[in-house]
Length: 179
Image (cartoon, rainbow, N blue to C red; front, side, top):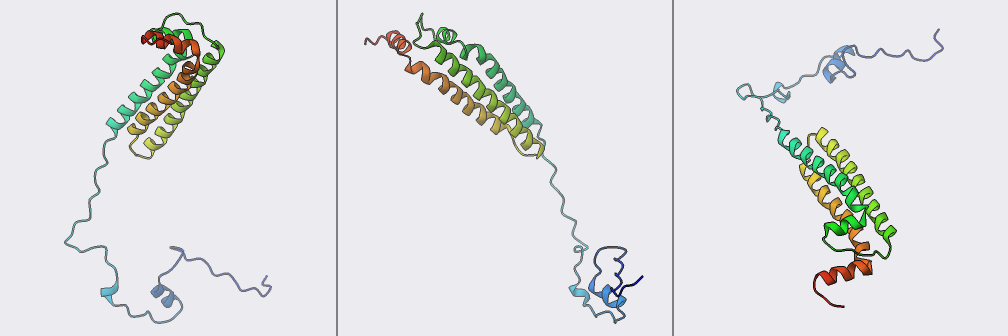
């Protein structure tokens, strides 16, 4: 049934749009004269097509990145015992027996440092994975993130240690400075 609406034209069979000369022929008009000099060519016949550069091997980048990530994970895991036990950290610093003013605050600072370093390692791994899948260089990100998150974790632990009066007096005594 036709309710007065114009019938839809069928879509072109071999593509969405026809060239202007094809449209003119189908409409029953003579094809327009086209100067062959204006028709784009694929390229001059005597010139070879441009060659793509061979993709660079990313094996070295991947090996270095994986090694840096493994080293960072090892540092985070091995730092758990050291950062969460303030007396172990003092032994590593070769400071004698010190009675902490607030042992729990130093321990919670160590836990916070480990959490920050582990979150940094996970974020770095995710970001490196994304860059690697995009074919971009990634070793420098793992190196830079390792340095930054190690420094942040060390600062989180160092500030409460430096503010503990007993620890500071032990460090000053070890240096030969009298108070």
